[in-house]
Image (tube, rainbow, N blue to C red; front, top):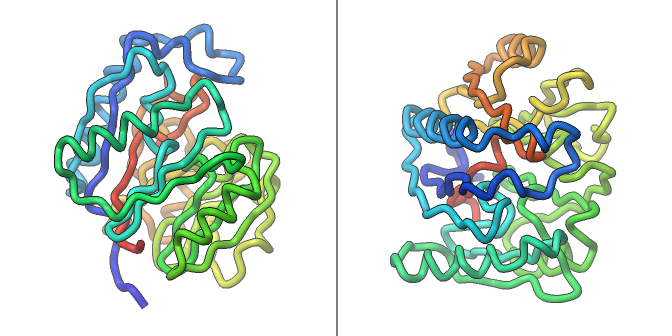
Length: 265
């Protein structure tokens, strides 16, 4: 078994471009996105990661890809194997190639690239990574074929498919540490995750279920969700709040804004 306090020590981010307001979003507040505020919030997010000892590498903004601030989705970066996904959202295709080219040009030590190819689709927001198992949401963005390809690429880890009606699986659950995860029971079936412990998040605060474990019991959550913060404290964690209102409007959460380099694959 792998013993570690967090699953990554390095993460890649990309600030929102001036085009961010044109992102793909189902949020009714999308038209109210304040790009200047989004840039400020992103800088604060990056600072928070750094304060927790995460090494952060910032890539340039991509004006031709309004959604590219959501770095979690194009690929799953691993120390041994890297999975280059294929977007279910066709308008985002191309981001994954730009990311891989940048990593190669800058000599970043990532695992051997493996690719999800047509007709498979796989987006990082559907992938929940724990120490010994990976769960993948079969959603409107990630299909069975994409999950099958991921499984074939990650032979050393158990990959389990979870059907979800959510936009992405991580909209309703996220892995923390020590076999514990956040979950919204009304949105995600707890029975899909045998052997795990849960911090159950009330449905009205479901946005905060998308949480990022920073190590040493610190959990990054969006600001303004007091019930979730209390639940985390009761479970022995230390909630760290960050303002991400402008990314909420773009259908993104705190995990969506970075692409970690995972230690487990």
